[in-house]
Image (tube, rainbow, N blue to C red; front, side):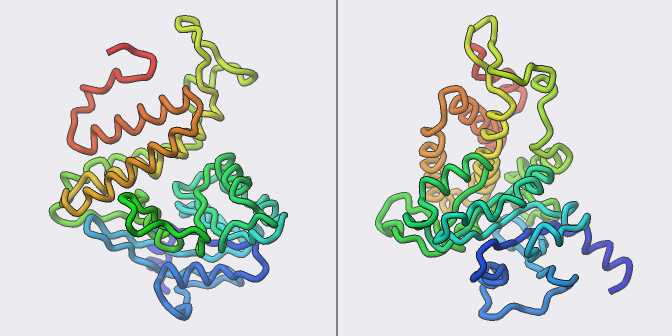
Amino acid sequence: MSDTEETTAALVPCVLVTSSGSGFEEGEIVKQILGTQTLPEPSKREDTVCWYPWTINNKYYTADVRLCVVPSTFQMSSEIAQTMQAFIAYFDSSQKDGLERLQPWIAVVEDIAPEVLILVCDRVCDTGVSRHEAQQWCLAHSFELVELSPQEVPDEEDDFPESTGVKRIIQALNANVWSSVEMKDGHNQGFGLMSSLVAARHNNPRSCPDPQSADSPVEGAIVNEETNQPERTKEEDTVVDAMTDLDIQELANLTSGDADDNFERLFTKLKEMKDKASSLPHEQRKAHAEKVAKAFWMAIGGDDDEIDGLSSGEES
């Protein structure tokens, strides 16, 4: 590979795939994402780290990414850290310490702040890691839980069936705003929000604190003197931002192109968002609704100036 090719490859965003389950190799997830029975030859290999090329190709855009298998944090490199935009971690839910084995990765994830965070297991297990434990862990660390073989499969006759397994993983990766995205003809105008998100997210990662909140006291809740209501802390804002990231990205997809094709999925997504928001505390629920409403307005071509003053604390 020439120096030019190596430089170009280094700029391609990657999906880091790792596994803490002793009986489950990362390559299994890679095979399922690629839809192959066997692993192809990696485009690059460094010891136990392997890169596999993957092109996301949907009706709106194409994006070249690399599926990067990294067995442990000891194999992390500056190249991986600079290009990682999604993180998929498998854990053995049959073991009570299954989630604890992922602990070394938490500091890495918090430092790099990739846009997509997915926690994967075969299925939750009451004798190992229960659904409640897995969901609490995901909420604490801003992950989405995906079961490869869920015990309860969504009813096909349900008006709003949820995606599961590798299908959900691929769906989440398709909804991400990749730095390598190339819009297809006919979708540039409707996908205007995508371009804005690409620039905003990769120039200002979500781990950056808000300038106003950075000057606020860290200890305890901050009180708004005018409303006498507790304002959100930085930790709460991080949770809200992480939960709304994927929602906003997928709304950008669904409000573009053929409305008929997207109509059913749009309502499915809105239901998912409603269910997700219903479990949040009051202030976080308001922030979630406000942020998604703004993004949705811009996605359908609304003027940013018209909603510039919108906030949960202002009157209309």
